[in-house]
Length: 374
Ligand code: OSB
Ligand code: MG
Image: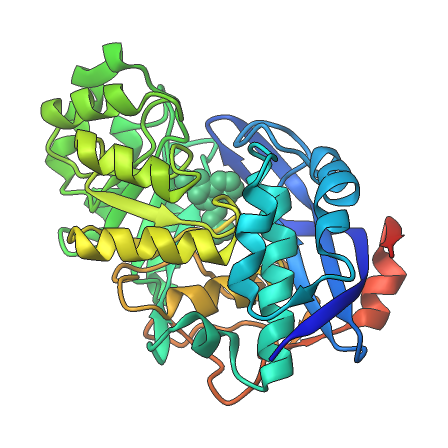
C-alpha cells in the first residue's frame, strides 16, 4: 500500500520526571522531547519521537541538531515522494547524510507508524514481531547513597520488574552493587550500565564486579573503544553488552567480529530507526547473540515503538520498557503503558498502528514550540 507524505510537523514538549535520572555522564529532571508527526495525502498521521536529549552527554546529538537535520535535509527527501513500504526510507536518508541517527530514526519510525495505521495492522505485525508480552527491566539512576539505592532496588523488585539495572560510575560501583546483591539475594537478575565511565586501565577494577553474578555490564568504555571492549572482554567474566557503540548493523558486525560484546541492546532511536534495528536483530540472531530493547526515557509514543520492536523473536532479555507511571505523573497516550505484577507489558495486538491514542489537544497545550514542514 503506497502513500505520499504531504506534511511533517515537529514540536517539543517537556515532561517532568517523577524522580531525577542520573547516569555517569549527566543528570536530568525534566525530559525535553521532540515529537514528529507525518501526515499523508489521505490525512492519516504517523507519530515518531526523537530520543535526542537537551545535552550531548549520551550521544553527540541534541534536540536542536535533530530539528535542523530533519528540517533541512531529511524532510525534503521524503515530502511528496511515493513510498511503497517504510523500509525504503532508511536508504533514502543514508545516502550522503552521515550520522544523525536520532534525527533519522524519529522521522523513519513515524513513517512506519503511519504505514501500520494505513494498513490497519499493529506496528508489531508490520515489523515481524511475534511476542504477546515483553518482560520488563528497570533502569535505576545513580543514587546519592548506597542506602537510597538499596531502597530503590527493593521497591523495583517488589513491583515485579524482571531485571534490575543499576547505573554505575567509578566511586559508585563495587560497594553499591554489593549492597544491592546482598539485599535482593542470589536469584535477583541484576545488571549494571556504566555509560562509558571506565577506561581500559580500570580493567581490574571492573573485574571486581565479576563476583556479583551480573547478567551483564553495559557500555563500560567509550563508544568508539570497540577494540578495547574486546580486550576488556578477555579480562572480565561478566558479559559485556554494547549500547552507545552500536549505531548501525555495520557497527554490530565489527563488534561481534572482534568479540567486543556478548549482548547488544537495540534502541531504534539510536540506530537510525526500524530498518536498521531489524538488520541488527537479524544479524545477532544468526550469530546466537541475544538482544534486548533499550530505552531513552521515552514518552508513551516512543514506548509504543519500543514495545512493538521488542516483540521480535531475538529480544530474549527484559527490555528497558518501564510503564508510564515509572517516569511520568501523566503520559501523553491513552491508555498509559502498564506492567502486570509478573513484570510484563502487553503488546497491543488488537489495535492498528501504535496501539495507543495520542492526546493531541494536550500536546498542543504543552508544546514549547511547533514547526510545520510542507
Ligand atoms: O544507557 O540505557 C541507557 C536513559 C537515557 C540515556 C541512556 C540510557 C538510559 C536508560 C533509561 O537506561 C532506560 C529507560 O528508558 O527506562
Ligand atoms: Mg545503556
